Image (cartoon, rainbow, N blue to C red; front, top):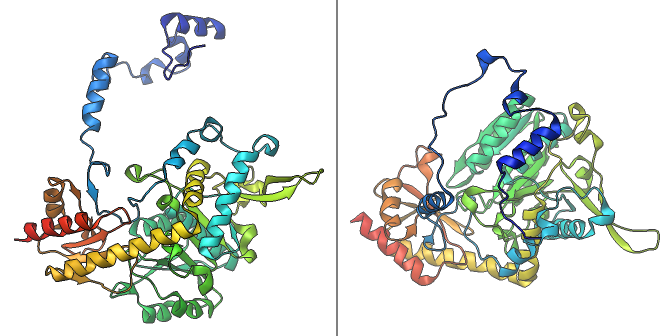
Length: 449
């Protein structure tokens, strides 16, 4: 039998389907809808084209996209250009993985379940936590779910979140909080890290959780050790949103007493893809394992003592009694979690650490080079692979000039922090070479003159 990527529907096919269901025409399918409310005009869309003409038009449109294969990227702000081992695409392209949905029948889903189990294990090792779920939609929704879990666990209705947490994650949290009547209070930053004195003023017995990002949105490393006793003094929960690649080189949040660690696994084997889909992770202490949203895969043995994997600790309420659910997220990003698992496995423990260290070293080289070329580094201090540079003209204008040179510039911070006009957030990953960094600085210097 010939395999087709696309199966056209002929008029004969249509006729046979209508006969099968016992109607004479497509219009008859809509007979229950009154004529007066039906739309009988023409849609405001282009006329249909032939296949070859359509492919040509779409190819021309696609060619306008600025991708990281043809351009040098210094854009981060939550989605990064990292090395993806070739084996990742090979494994996730296998039909038994990319067509799988929910492994409810463990006897025929062992491969999928084991892959998810390995993902959970590696996330626990990176974060220093006891339990991780089988993934979530993305880092932003994972963070919001962590806040909701905290409010349910503590029976409190107030969450403190630092201004240094990703702006989009903060917006997702506010959306979640509105429906649950939860008060979200933002804690200001001081020189790029959370203002500890401001946190001390806001913390009290009404606070369910405090949320920090590590490294934070400006690239700075938050001093989690200093924040932990403040967060826990009134028995609130400590939530940390963390870049899992950075945890290959810096101390994991679990070592600092974090109760919940969330983040996005995009940095491991998942392409940027214009912002998604990606893969969130969610890790907790043993105390909270029964409150975790989504799915958990456990390892067990069958009646013959053979190792096997099953879904476990998942509340039925998440499917059928949703008003009593701990979370209404009962799905996951299994294929992207698999991609992250394959990438982490291919890199290995030493490889992940080396990759993280290269990010730190190359970002340090870039910071030093910027300073030597007369640029002002803002909010400077210990960081991972991002830092802030102040320009003498709008970032939007500078980025247009850079694009003409084949360079994707950094993020315009004035979009989310109105006072930070002309401030660019720059990401330097392990893929950037010394020559590319030097070229980037030269083009920026030229645009200043």
